[in-house]
Image (cartoon, rainbow, N blue to C red; front, side, top):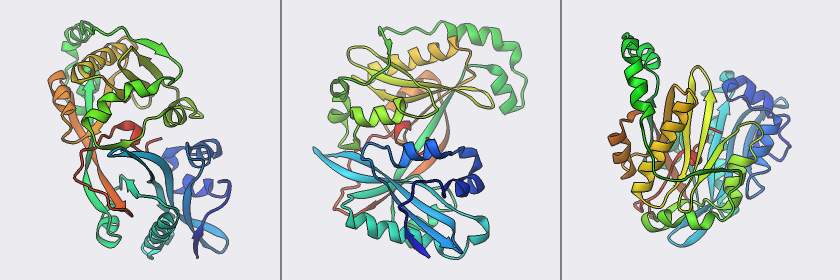
Length: 322
């Protein structure tokens, strides 16, 4: 039976562990995401059978800037069903329940980044709309990484390769900080160049980066720019440019240079950044030598009259890889 979930998360953790163990969700991370987000609410639909939760569809609420107004929107995340219960229409039932509840609660729209399995269900059976893609760009800092991926021995050139990366220059006088105070002055580029985006106010950024129960981030700023970096020690050492609030395109170019140099000095193998496919800032990444890698579809279900042709901003901060 499907229903709106009102629990504290304890009985959902086994579902996460069974379906997506790599996400490494525990109760602290779950409560940070669903109970302690900036709006202190969540919308979760679950399906129970014999007293056991076998599927869920979850929405995290966020504030959204749209043509001068602030809307409440929902980020569709963590949709999952136990393998033995798939193919029975459970996912569709939960998705319809969240849509019905979202309309009642005054959401303006839901958005998400579906995987290949759920994308056709959202688009063909639930009437969500595809509005574009967010693309991941890579910048290798270590030829050992490229050699492994390309199956070609490039390590002979590694000394020259590293010298080139070590000579990258930047102009900004960026300082490391541990807060997002005075954030409004860093949003002028977004307001000037985009008509809609997830609102980067102090509450959102504090929750997204400073209050995360486990991940640690490096925040840098000068008088006009603010950006967030993260070092991830996974299969290789990765450096991620996760947020960037910039004065102009020249500032973005300089921040990229600083980030590459910072990651190089920290012995990182690979730098990545996510940005909307077709955003003018992609041209700067191409000039810097970034390589387009993979991309995720962006889908939306509007409850209100939303003009989907409006220019919008999106980066790693908006993804559900948290």
